[in-house]
Length: 138
Image 1 (cartoon, one colour):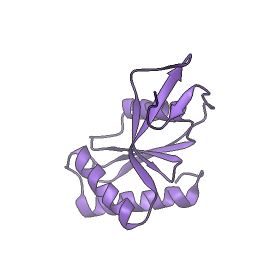
Image 2: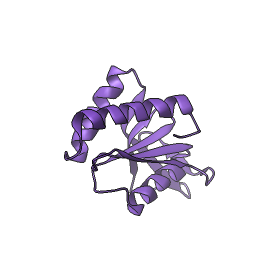
Image 3: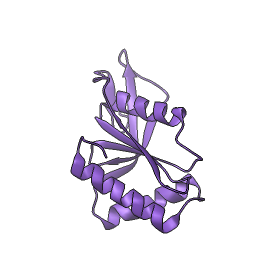
Image 4: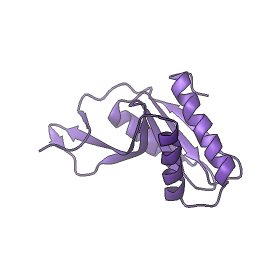
């Protein structure tokens, strides 16, 4: 369990375990995202789906954006996967999102295996001062 935001991270894990227990493995990632959103709503967990994160470099908004699957409690990035295991590419993706967004904690939830796999990743790389979070503004 994550030590940062223990109550909030505990709720996220409780819902992830509930979802995996009820649906098992074998569905596509988008199905788990849709179902996870239902649980977030039912449990009154504040969240944003496909939370936009944009990097501004030398005052220029870069063309390629980042999107968390979910940003819960306005502070925990959540990435859902339906794969045979958590691979380094998934970890690198979440690390990049945390690095760009300045959020302190993220989790990968993998529903593609018989037992729920998860990995909590703290942002230990400090803050980026060239980051813009939210909808792009012209």
